[in-house]
Amino acid sequence: MVLFSHGLTGSPISNDYISALRIFASWGYIVVAPFHGDSRFANVKLESFSDQLYALLHIKEFVAMQAVRPLSLSRSLDNVLASSAFAEHVDPTAIGGFGAS
Image 1 (cartoon, rainbow, N blue to C red):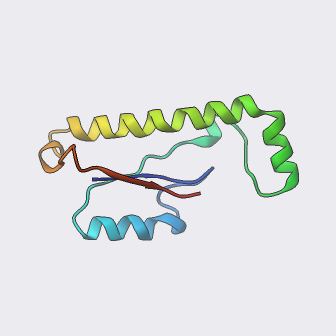
Image 2 (cartoon, rainbow, N blue to C red):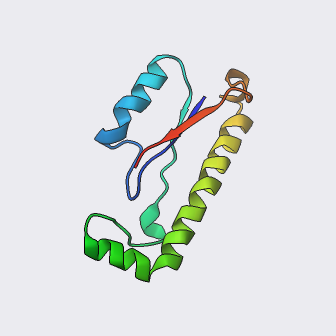
């Protein structure tokens, strides 16, 4: 199984990421790629100086958003490992992960 974490305000099914996820799936990997829902926690993007200044001024929101990511990744793994459809196909000692930003 492979666990994927997408970039800030991204989506695991965006053109930037979906090709890599498809390749893993084509080789028989179970791909777990949750939507992080960044905009639920903070209106943060880092495309310009003003965006970076906004992030600094709203650092609590930004940190809260980043703190939720590992929790959502962990919960996603828990759900797959507990699923009757997937659990018997996953070696829990052989789970990889990667991310992009």
